[in-house]
Length: 69
Ligand SMILES: [Zn+2]
Image (cartoon, rainbow, N blue to C red; front, side, top):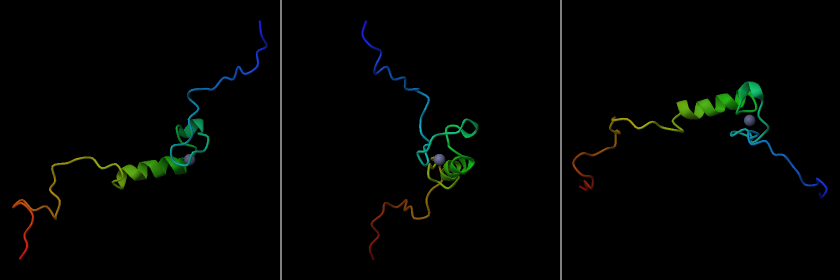
């Protein structure tokens, strides 16, 4: 048998904080802190990840667009 060198165990669950890349804290997984959790949540609420709706944008022109006059 050869020496057991290089047998490095890398935990699969050890992912960095998706916001800042620091090591996550169990309490706020997968984030490193409440602040980063809030930042991610803020992205959702702020439209960073916009949910498609049936609402028509204000600048939408149902007539077909190029109204040059
Ligand atoms: Zn973080």
